[in-house]
Length: 424
Image 1 (cartoon, rainbow, N blue to C red):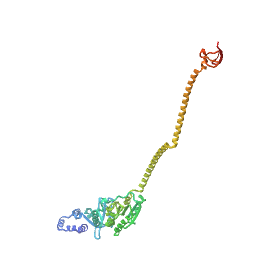
Image 2 (tube, rainbow, N blue to C red; image 1 turned 45 degrees about the vertical axis):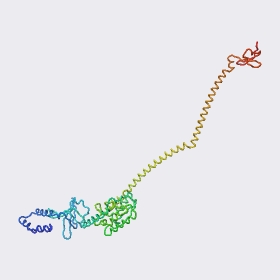
Image 3 (cartoon, rainbow, N blue to C red; image 1 turned 180 degrees about the vertical axis):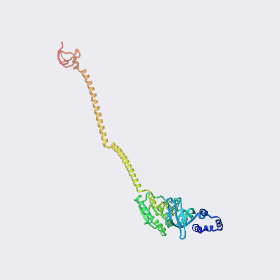
Image 4 (cartoon, helix red, strand yellow; image 1 turned 90 degrees about the vertical axis):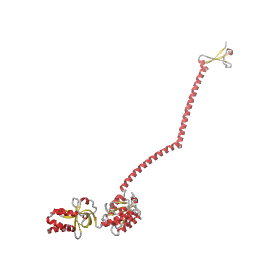
């Protein structure tokens, strides 16, 4: 083989492959027939991709030469103090990344070893990334999660509902982080009436777990309606204080409901499982703590005002109707109405009396007229007017109705007077 080939082998393939190439059988084959570059590279690729260990490997190193072309793939180099490894992550895997990659980041990269034939270099095709040391922390996370879950700290039955209208909200977070500013702005925008109790505490480092647990216990003594436990995003090491058993137990024992808003949407901590409600971000936690906003209250108040106005108007109308009914009954039972009724009765009786008297007078007048006519018919004067005369005796005035009663001198009365006569 040439020196150039030896250089290629030493810089492009692992030592394990070098040993394989050094086997006598391989060299005997190569002496009889020279490889083309393509054929040799393909053969090396088959060797690498046929090794099961190299197809499921975790590699530690520092990120450098990070590149994100428009295709969506991610290219970077993983290096340590003695060597470097070219890495590729295809777009489908890169789209699921939750880490913000940057040069200088210490990573553990999972993938498989392959060969990029056009340049004759081997590289790692990555499908999973995690910060360096996350593997051990993740194992501890799973162990502690299993222990606490067995105690029932994460059961859904112990979760409490979040009050619809909180009057006092406790916040346990860092006083200098952006998470606090975002939560306060959200609370001020959604429900400015709420009272906020801030308990500043470290959220990262060895001092954070006892401080967080103490802060949760202290804020519970202030009788909040709900507690927000929050911090901004970070690596698993940054968020590890919220996986501490002391903090998780403090959350589980909290008298007030706890909403956790720790990290980003893809970050999960044990406090998220122990909390009564998990929010993807601190801002979302503040939103979930205020289900009813000031706009909702304003709209509800306007609706209640409208309903109250309608109710009052209906009540006034009903009272007016009842008052009118009572006034009618009172007017019916009042002495004035009875006096008016009696006066009308007197008028009616007077009218009837007057009518009766008139009728009686008319009847008596009719009877009198009849009697008068009868009297007129029987009046001697009327008889005299028809040519009759009344003869009386002069001496005693007796009517001469028989010859035997006639005397010498008599008076004869006719219609217009009387005269004396003598008997012959």
